[in-house]
Amino acid sequence: MTADTAHTELAPMLVLEHAEVLTELSADPGPLAAVHARRAVAAAYYAVLHRLCLAVARTALPTGHDAECFALCRSISHGSVDTIARWLVGAAVPPEPVRGLVRVAAGSELTTFAGHTLQLQWWRTRADYDHVAVFGRPIALLACRSAREAIAALDAEHGTPAWGAFSSLVLHRGF
Image (cartoon, rainbow, N blue to C red):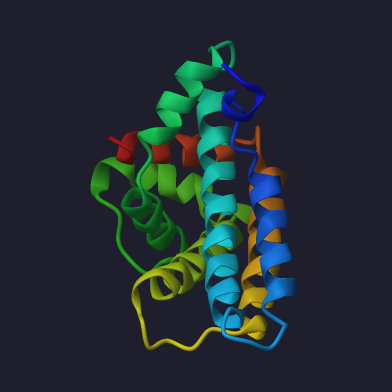
């Protein structure tokens, strides 16, 4: 295997840095400005999603090999993260079997994480699929700031009872 094909972990903070670089590129006038802004929004969302997936996998498999953790990460879907986030912010009612987990996770910084994640996912979907949506540097800046705040909220709860309930929800819904 050559150096350019060697496996490296997808580092969420590097993805977020990439989003910030793309945001700066979106300030330049020209035909690529909107493309850079759209890609910045998507990268900001993916930084948050990958940070969540890796944190959940490392919690579930604290002595697991990287390959096992990465496989578990791939089992966590956008839809399940969206569903759980809606439960935490009160936009949807969770099913009875997981209401206790939602109750423990809600009211913590994970509710802030959920709100940011829902906003980022909405922007990312529009950036990727809505050909007439207008994206510029202001939205890209907001997306990067929202991603940083989401990651900070997630990190603040890591290892707490709220995190335990939340990561259990993610694993439960991920399959």
